[in-house]
Image: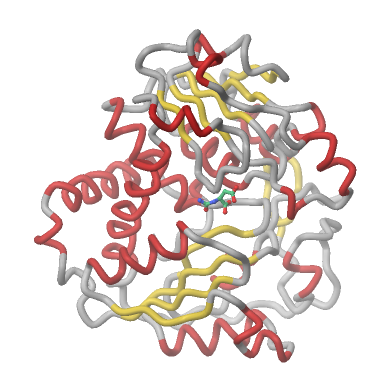
Length: 352
Ligand code: NCD
């Protein structure tokens, strides 16, 4: 495991070993306080963040390492027009591990082509967010004892919600997970996620109503309508406030349901749900810090390497306006297969 770009790259065994370490850290934190002693983490946040940024920083401090970086790209040379490639070449010379969040889909993959140290994807546009998934799986495993056989409802903006895409990729590694995809039709999962689920023959139903499926669920994963990702503001206006989980709706749910949310919440979970023992989203945020401690002890202790030269691109192959190749056309024209279809290897969009 050199980088963490997409949760799909991890095998179930690799995840289980990471979880064992995470569990050990939760039970015996003092044993890990020097696990990254002398290591330096770069934290490059090109987009707003509270939990991911703070939990990575506190995770690194708790395993004995140190941290530098920016939480606002306007305070770095990015504001002078520096390319992602150059920023990464520089920063990877100073750090032992780079944590990056970027509004462009495929940015973490792009960074990994030029970095001498591991890149951790802390969110690339509306594409993926694999470290949130480490928090999510830790929460489920710790509180339910395992993931196999669970019925999981994913509710809200499944089109733009990167946490959902990464979580589906992770849950696909377990046995007999049932997926209830709850969203308005225009915010359903993107084509590349549908191809992913179809290729693996994952049990799933797509519905628009939350109330009808709530009694079936072991886990309900609520998400925010991702306002900043909408090209058409009217589409956002049509869909905001569409799902609101209330105490009353929870009356029909199982007694051992886990109500999860990557946070921040806007209005999709009423505040009085917080006191219901099934609401675990604040625990989930804390589990995320331990999961990131486990990840950092694993990744930041690798030796540096020099990446092989990559082809220099000239024009973007991909038509996704949010793809990193649109702003950084020097990236190589990499193609991968998703369910037998040629897709952009950065953002997963089908190539026309
Ligand atoms: C999520 C994100 O940034 O994608 N937040 C997080 O990292 N915990 C979810 C969101 O912003 O809605």
